[in-house]
Length: 259
Image (cartoon, rainbow, N blue to C red; front, side):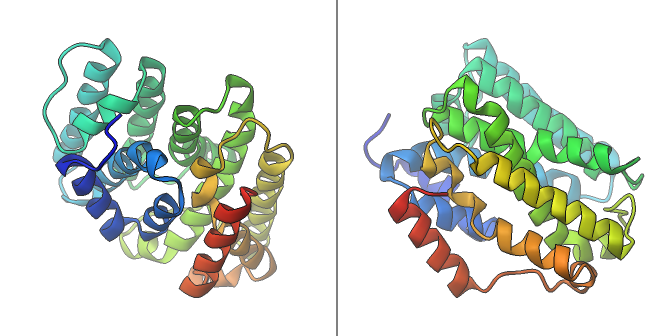
Protein backbone atom coordinates (compact mmCIF):
# COMPACT_ATOMS: atom_id res chain seq x y z
CA UNK A 1 0.00 0.00 0.00
CA UNK A 2 1.30 3.45 -0.86
CA UNK A 3 2.75 5.38 2.06
CA UNK A 4 1.46 8.70 0.74
CA UNK A 5 -1.73 9.75 -0.98
CA UNK A 6 -1.57 9.61 -4.76
CA UNK A 7 -3.85 11.63 -7.03
CA UNK A 8 -6.62 9.03 -6.90
CA UNK A 9 -6.71 8.85 -3.12
CA UNK A 10 -6.66 12.63 -2.92
CA UNK A 11 -9.61 12.73 -5.31
CA UNK A 12 -11.46 10.15 -3.21
CA UNK A 13 -10.85 12.19 -0.06
CA UNK A 14 -12.09 15.38 -1.74
CA UNK A 15 -15.23 13.61 -2.94
CA UNK A 16 -16.00 12.29 0.54
CA UNK A 17 -15.25 15.64 2.18
CA UNK A 18 -17.82 17.36 -0.03
CA UNK A 19 -20.56 14.73 -0.07
CA UNK A 20 -20.22 12.84 3.22
CA UNK A 21 -18.67 15.12 5.86
CA UNK A 22 -19.20 12.73 8.79
CA UNK A 23 -17.36 9.86 7.14
CA UNK A 24 -14.67 12.29 6.00
CA UNK A 25 -14.06 13.43 9.57
CA UNK A 26 -14.15 9.81 10.77
CA UNK A 27 -11.51 8.84 8.22
CA UNK A 28 -9.36 11.80 9.18
CA UNK A 29 -9.59 10.72 12.83
CA UNK A 30 -8.32 7.25 11.89
CA UNK A 31 -4.63 6.34 11.50
CA UNK A 32 -3.10 7.43 8.20
CA UNK A 33 -2.72 3.85 6.96
CA UNK A 34 -6.45 3.23 7.49
CA UNK A 35 -7.35 6.17 5.28
CA UNK A 36 -5.97 4.31 2.25
CA UNK A 37 -8.81 1.84 2.83
CA UNK A 38 -11.52 4.15 4.08
CA UNK A 39 -11.39 6.91 1.49
CA UNK A 40 -11.84 4.63 -1.57
CA UNK A 41 -14.66 2.78 0.20
CA UNK A 42 -16.40 5.96 1.27
CA UNK A 43 -15.95 7.54 -2.16
CA UNK A 44 -17.43 4.42 -3.75
CA UNK A 45 -20.40 4.73 -1.40
CA UNK A 46 -20.89 8.38 -2.37
CA UNK A 47 -20.87 7.56 -6.07
CA UNK A 48 -23.32 4.68 -5.71
CA UNK A 49 -25.63 6.47 -3.26
CA UNK A 50 -26.06 9.45 -5.54
CA UNK A 51 -26.43 7.46 -8.77
CA UNK A 52 -30.24 7.12 -8.47
CA UNK A 53 -30.59 10.86 -7.81
CA UNK A 54 -28.53 12.53 -10.53
CA UNK A 55 -31.13 11.93 -13.21
CA UNK A 56 -34.89 11.79 -13.31
CA UNK A 57 -34.76 9.00 -15.86
CA UNK A 58 -34.83 5.55 -14.20
CA UNK A 59 -33.10 3.88 -17.16
CA UNK A 60 -30.04 6.12 -16.82
CA UNK A 61 -29.94 5.56 -13.07
CA UNK A 62 -30.02 1.80 -13.68
CA UNK A 63 -27.15 2.18 -16.15
CA UNK A 64 -25.07 4.07 -13.58
CA UNK A 65 -25.61 1.38 -10.97
CA UNK A 66 -24.83 -1.35 -13.50
CA UNK A 67 -21.55 0.41 -14.32
CA UNK A 68 -20.52 0.02 -10.69
CA UNK A 69 -21.61 -3.61 -10.62
CA UNK A 70 -19.48 -4.26 -13.68
CA UNK A 71 -16.50 -2.56 -12.03
CA UNK A 72 -16.93 -4.71 -8.92
CA UNK A 73 -17.15 -7.82 -11.07
CA UNK A 74 -13.79 -6.90 -12.61
CA UNK A 75 -12.30 -6.45 -9.13
CA UNK A 76 -13.71 -9.79 -7.97
CA UNK A 77 -12.30 -11.54 -11.04
CA UNK A 78 -8.80 -10.32 -10.22
CA UNK A 79 -7.93 -9.33 -13.78
CA UNK A 80 -7.74 -5.99 -15.54
CA UNK A 81 -9.82 -3.32 -13.84
CA UNK A 82 -11.09 -0.19 -15.57
CA UNK A 83 -9.19 3.02 -14.93
CA UNK A 84 -11.16 5.34 -12.67
CA UNK A 85 -10.20 7.63 -9.80
CA UNK A 86 -12.37 5.63 -7.36
CA UNK A 87 -12.32 2.16 -8.90
CA UNK A 88 -8.53 2.08 -9.22
CA UNK A 89 -7.71 2.66 -5.51
CA UNK A 90 -10.72 0.54 -4.52
CA UNK A 91 -9.29 -2.41 -6.46
CA UNK A 92 -6.06 -2.11 -4.47
CA UNK A 93 -7.80 -2.74 -1.14
CA UNK A 94 -10.61 -5.20 -1.93
CA UNK A 95 -10.63 -8.96 -2.05
CA UNK A 96 -13.22 -10.87 -4.11
CA UNK A 97 -15.43 -11.48 -1.06
CA UNK A 98 -15.49 -7.76 -0.34
CA UNK A 99 -16.45 -6.95 -3.92
CA UNK A 100 -19.41 -9.32 -3.62
CA UNK A 101 -20.62 -7.58 -0.45
CA UNK A 102 -20.38 -4.23 -2.21
CA UNK A 103 -22.20 -5.65 -5.23
CA UNK A 104 -25.13 -6.43 -2.93
CA UNK A 105 -24.95 -2.80 -1.76
CA UNK A 106 -25.21 -1.54 -5.33
CA UNK A 107 -28.09 -3.89 -6.08
CA UNK A 108 -29.94 -2.69 -2.97
CA UNK A 109 -29.61 0.91 -4.17
CA UNK A 110 -31.98 0.11 -7.01
CA UNK A 111 -34.72 0.66 -4.42
CA UNK A 112 -33.78 4.35 -4.42
CA UNK A 113 -34.81 4.64 -8.06
CA UNK A 114 -38.34 3.49 -7.33
CA UNK A 115 -41.14 5.36 -5.57
CA UNK A 116 -42.62 2.15 -4.19
CA UNK A 117 -42.42 2.19 -0.39
CA UNK A 118 -40.79 -0.56 1.65
CA UNK A 119 -43.23 -3.37 2.33
CA UNK A 120 -42.62 -3.37 6.07
CA UNK A 121 -40.01 -2.65 8.74
CA UNK A 122 -38.10 -5.83 7.94
CA UNK A 123 -37.84 -4.76 4.31
CA UNK A 124 -36.35 -1.41 5.38
CA UNK A 125 -33.93 -3.06 7.81
CA UNK A 126 -32.84 -5.47 5.09
CA UNK A 127 -32.06 -2.53 2.84
CA UNK A 128 -30.00 -0.91 5.61
CA UNK A 129 -28.16 -4.18 6.22
CA UNK A 130 -27.15 -4.46 2.57
CA UNK A 131 -26.15 -0.79 2.30
CA UNK A 132 -24.83 0.86 5.48
CA UNK A 133 -24.02 -2.38 7.30
CA UNK A 134 -22.40 -3.92 4.23
CA UNK A 135 -20.14 -0.91 3.79
CA UNK A 136 -19.19 -0.91 7.48
CA UNK A 137 -18.42 -4.62 7.39
CA UNK A 138 -16.12 -4.30 4.38
CA UNK A 139 -14.30 -1.41 6.05
CA UNK A 140 -13.87 -3.42 9.26
CA UNK A 141 -12.83 -6.55 7.38
CA UNK A 142 -10.22 -4.72 5.29
CA UNK A 143 -8.79 -3.17 8.46
CA UNK A 144 -8.41 -6.53 10.16
CA UNK A 145 -11.74 -7.73 11.58
CA UNK A 146 -12.19 -11.48 11.62
CA UNK A 147 -15.22 -13.35 10.31
CA UNK A 148 -16.53 -13.81 13.85
CA UNK A 149 -17.06 -10.07 14.16
CA UNK A 150 -19.40 -9.78 11.19
CA UNK A 151 -22.69 -10.05 13.09
CA UNK A 152 -21.65 -7.40 15.60
CA UNK A 153 -20.36 -5.03 12.94
CA UNK A 154 -23.47 -5.45 10.82
CA UNK A 155 -25.72 -4.89 13.84
CA UNK A 156 -23.99 -1.57 14.52
CA UNK A 157 -24.09 -0.79 10.80
CA UNK A 158 -27.86 -1.17 10.62
CA UNK A 159 -28.16 1.23 13.56
CA UNK A 160 -25.89 3.68 11.77
CA UNK A 161 -27.88 3.34 8.57
CA UNK A 162 -31.16 3.89 10.41
CA UNK A 163 -29.85 7.07 12.04
CA UNK A 164 -28.75 8.37 8.62
CA UNK A 165 -32.09 7.35 7.11
CA UNK A 166 -34.00 9.24 9.80
CA UNK A 167 -31.90 12.34 9.14
CA UNK A 168 -32.69 12.10 5.42
CA UNK A 169 -36.47 11.72 5.82
CA UNK A 170 -37.42 15.35 5.00
CA UNK A 171 -35.32 15.37 1.84
CA UNK A 172 -36.62 11.97 0.77
CA UNK A 173 -40.22 13.04 1.25
CA UNK A 174 -39.57 16.29 -0.65
CA UNK A 175 -38.32 14.14 -3.53
CA UNK A 176 -41.60 12.23 -3.61
CA UNK A 177 -40.32 9.13 -1.83
CA UNK A 178 -42.06 7.11 0.88
CA UNK A 179 -39.10 6.40 3.16
CA UNK A 180 -40.93 4.74 6.05
CA UNK A 181 -43.39 1.85 5.76
CA UNK A 182 -45.22 3.28 8.78
CA UNK A 183 -44.64 6.88 9.76
CA UNK A 184 -46.79 6.99 12.88
CA UNK A 185 -44.89 8.50 15.82
CA UNK A 186 -45.20 5.39 17.97
CA UNK A 187 -43.84 3.24 15.14
CA UNK A 188 -40.94 5.61 14.49
CA UNK A 189 -40.07 5.59 18.21
CA UNK A 190 -40.18 1.79 18.27
CA UNK A 191 -37.94 1.61 15.21
CA UNK A 192 -35.47 3.98 16.87
CA UNK A 193 -35.42 1.88 20.04
CA UNK A 194 -34.72 -1.16 17.92
CA UNK A 195 -31.81 0.71 16.35
CA UNK A 196 -30.41 1.52 19.78
CA UNK A 197 -30.66 -2.16 20.71
CA UNK A 198 -28.69 -3.07 17.59
CA UNK A 199 -26.07 -0.46 18.45
CA UNK A 200 -25.71 -1.92 21.95
CA UNK A 201 -25.45 -5.40 20.47
CA UNK A 202 -22.65 -4.26 18.17
CA UNK A 203 -20.80 -2.69 21.08
CA UNK A 204 -21.37 -5.61 23.44
CA UNK A 205 -17.99 -7.08 22.47
CA UNK A 206 -15.54 -4.79 20.70
CA UNK A 207 -12.78 -7.40 20.56
CA UNK A 208 -11.46 -8.13 17.09
CA UNK A 209 -13.11 -5.04 15.59
CA UNK A 210 -10.76 -2.23 14.48
CA UNK A 211 -11.86 1.08 15.95
CA UNK A 212 -10.73 2.95 12.83
CA UNK A 213 -13.51 1.30 10.83
CA UNK A 214 -16.15 2.13 13.43
CA UNK A 215 -15.48 5.83 13.99
CA UNK A 216 -18.18 6.70 11.45
CA UNK A 217 -20.71 5.57 14.06
CA UNK A 218 -20.22 8.92 15.81
CA UNK A 219 -23.57 10.58 16.38
CA UNK A 220 -25.58 7.40 15.76
CA UNK A 221 -26.63 6.98 19.37
CA UNK A 222 -27.56 10.64 19.74
CA UNK A 223 -29.78 10.59 16.63
CA UNK A 224 -31.55 7.38 17.60
CA UNK A 225 -32.14 8.52 21.19
CA UNK A 226 -33.64 11.77 19.93
CA UNK A 227 -35.89 9.90 17.49
CA UNK A 228 -37.00 7.51 20.23
CA UNK A 229 -37.88 10.29 22.67
CA UNK A 230 -39.29 12.76 20.11
CA UNK A 231 -40.28 10.94 16.91
CA UNK A 232 -41.72 14.15 15.50
CA UNK A 233 -38.16 15.46 15.22
CA UNK A 234 -37.65 13.03 12.34
CA UNK A 235 -40.22 14.72 10.10
CA UNK A 236 -39.13 18.16 11.28
CA UNK A 237 -35.51 17.47 10.32
CA UNK A 238 -34.22 18.21 13.80
CA UNK A 239 -31.97 15.22 14.39
CA UNK A 240 -28.57 16.50 13.30
CA UNK A 241 -26.10 16.60 16.19
CA UNK A 242 -24.09 19.78 16.47
CA UNK A 243 -20.78 19.69 14.58
CA UNK A 244 -19.00 20.55 17.84
CA UNK A 245 -20.59 17.60 19.64
CA UNK A 246 -19.74 15.31 16.76
CA UNK A 247 -16.09 16.40 16.69
CA UNK A 248 -15.77 15.91 20.46
CA UNK A 249 -17.23 12.41 20.21
CA UNK A 250 -14.98 11.53 17.29
CA UNK A 251 -11.88 12.76 19.07
CA UNK A 252 -12.76 10.87 22.24
CA UNK A 253 -13.49 7.62 20.43
CA UNK A 254 -10.37 7.89 18.30
CA UNK A 255 -8.25 8.50 21.41
CA UNK A 256 -9.73 5.67 23.47
CA UNK A 257 -10.57 3.17 20.72
CA UNK A 258 -14.02 2.71 22.30
CA UNK A 259 -16.28 3.28 19.36
